[in-house]
Length: 123
Ligand SMILES: [Zn+2]
Image 1: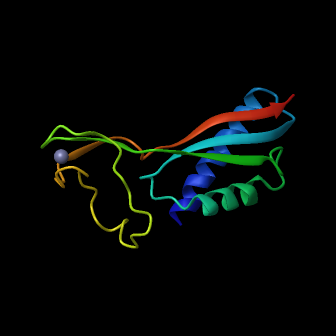
Image 2: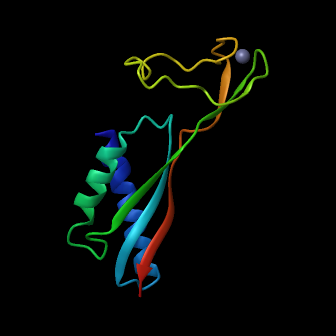
């Protein structure tokens, strides 16, 4: 239910923002989800659509942009992407490591976020 709580929070943020700005109808929202956020994007959009029902945001489009991860390795100084293997069924279990020296001493600078970027609404 991780996706549900995230979606619930996003929906509340959207509705609050629209209310503050006297919005009449939400046309679309845009999210940015990091590739290390461990979120199922389809489920997030599904729940947002469900939670929008009966509100000013019912039927709004949900656009999702995936944000590439960026790490910094403390062992070799590597900076960049993590090179996730999408075919690896265990990618969510194995701790992330440096693609260059395979050290686990890495800092994740980007890629874990789930941000509400834009709300398009009419007043
Ligand atoms: Zn390294």
